[in-house]
Amino acid sequence: MALFGNKKTEEEAKKPAAKSAAKKPAAKALKDKDAKTDEKVSMQDLYADTKTVSGFKGAVVSGSKENNSYRVLVKPLITEKATNLIGANKYVFVVAANANKIEIAKAVKATYGVNPVKVNVVNSFGKKVARGRIRGQRNDWRKAIVTLAKGESIQIYEGV
Image 1 (cartoon, rainbow, N blue to C red):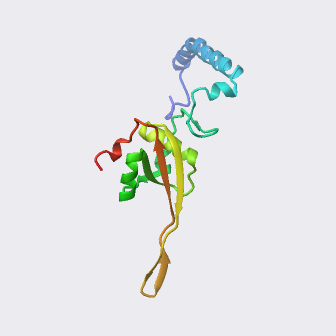
Image 2 (image 1 turned 180 degrees about the vertical axis):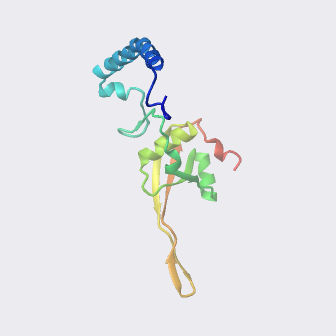
Image 3 (image 1 turned 135 degrees about the vertical axis):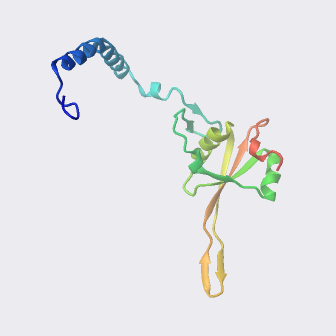
């Protein structure tokens, strides 16, 4: 036998042939199963596991395994004004600069398991600052105010 198994003896050559013959019906069954699924797949079937988010026209929360909510929601914003909004069932988050309302709603649903009723977005521009003769500007950031339905809450804010 060769060092890396390229050459086989007559006995070894016969054994895998017998094994592959036994596996052929299972492989054929898998191919038939794949062929059946490929034949009649419509767009409606592909998106059957999606749910719509209330309050948004055309917004869809997909049931995909890929979850990028950590890229959309940067952190919850805990300020005096934000804690006062909790009484009105509104929660404030710092979000990514390129996130839109639909992505924010999907991220809140994926992260906290609650359906947002409404999402408002505010762009905040960084202040111009000076340190002696050096002038600069703080980073621009984006804030999202998420309104939830009555009776729903996000646990991260409890006790703040």
